[in-house]
Length: 241
Image (cartoon, rainbow, N blue to C red; front, side, top):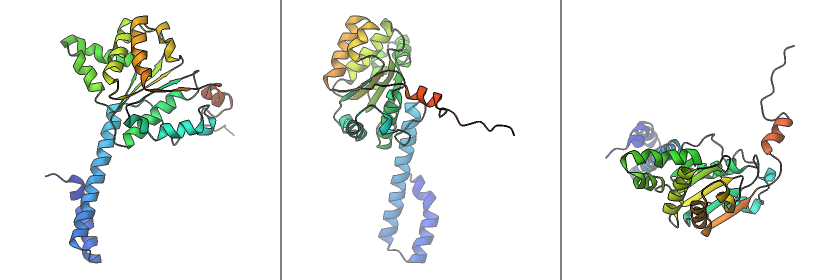
């Protein structure tokens, strides 16, 4: 058996054990705990790499008092209990009201708790099954996505979506239905997705998406624009003397 983290920690750990006369069982327990922690951290790093989260946003930089989402709702979402129940989350509202930050922070927290996460824009989601059509493995491509515990589809509605995008979105929503949690963010309420996608596919996908979903609506002015106009969007330049 391979115990890379145990082997790395063993020399220092055994030296400490000898000097402090630890019980042998205690030494073994500490070294095995070190191995488990190392493996858990390696797993999280691998999950984060595979998720390809775009900007590293977490709840450490989230300002709950600046969000229009009720604080109790924020805290309930942060527990991720809804993910363990394979429930979905739809976050809709104007640009700059924290939708993307919330979705990515939830994804990072899920990874920290040992979950697998996939994050897509509608464009990248379209390309993913699209690549699989070359060798007729679309179902396998979708199955790979839905092996993740949490699937995020970000920024739906920023641009019109054609047949291919609607089909990719439907395939993932259908495959995840009652099995995995899906988060969607959009400047449109999901009920309006038929204005940017072919109506039949949009209606069917949204029907499955919202059946077991929490709907969170954001409102207010763009936080990004507010930061920009107040000079908080950049680090101040050092002015020459």
